[in-house]
Image 1 (tube, helix red, strand yellow):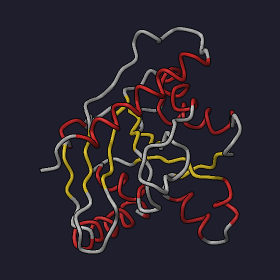
Image 2 (tube, rainbow, N blue to C red; image 1 turned 90 degrees about the vertical axis):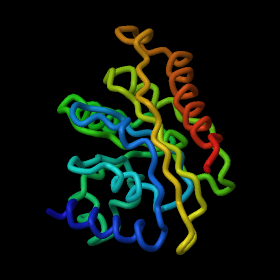
Image 3 (cartoon, rainbow, N blue to C red; image 1 turned 180 degrees about the vertical axis):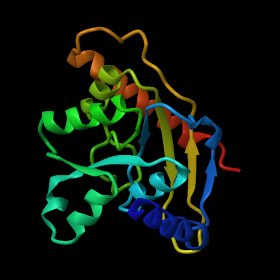
Length: 197
């Protein structure tokens, strides 16, 4: 109930305050696990990505520091957010992410690992490649085209599912993980470049 209520609240904000324009909803599978991968330009991005998915819940990683904030930590735990130690190979976070997908759920990731302050895409972290490889779940690239300005349109473009079948079943190697991560970011970049008209 908490997740549904908070999502409804944010939908109203994005609909009326930011006049969101969401394209490509037909690319979101109705069932089964998948990974939503988006560029990251603002604190608004996680609720925006969570709001575009109707009738299903999205699970997100968030930096562990947020879980030290009283009350707020309880709220984010209640809406499917789990901690990750940034700057290190957090095995617990990776396992949690894989379990979410194994159970048929949706995982939301920001491959850059942090917000871009210039609106330019940052290099992706290899962890997204590891999760995509180990889970074998389809990856849905999403481009957020901002900036967020009150009563100015924010555009969200959802791309077609990506599957990296040529890597499935192989031992995870750094080069392969970087290639997968780079391919995901390249697709996000292409979505951003498409004519916005």
